[in-house]
Length: 118
Image (tube, rainbow, N blue to C red; front, side):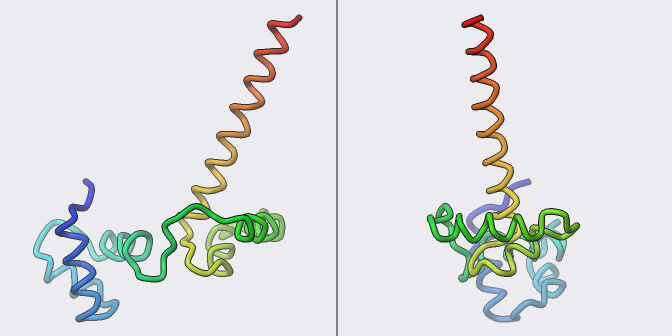
């Protein structure tokens, strides 16, 4: 179930009032959202310090350097996002997954094209 604009605004207001007490905020919201759902919504989408736009060229370079450094770590996305100001764990994971999806589509197109030529 997606969050409505009203819920988002309420969460933002309650975080300003009660800081990061998400259990209390969940009780005050009086709906079927858990404290975990509210925390994740705030941390991944609503917090003031989150950059909403795509990674710029400098961030892209930093991302790949950090990915090479942490690619074998279990918590790689958390480690990478902690060193990229304004980027969430979800954003860096999605950035990588989008890159992979585009990369494999290109490879598939090349293979399909090669089959046509042969």
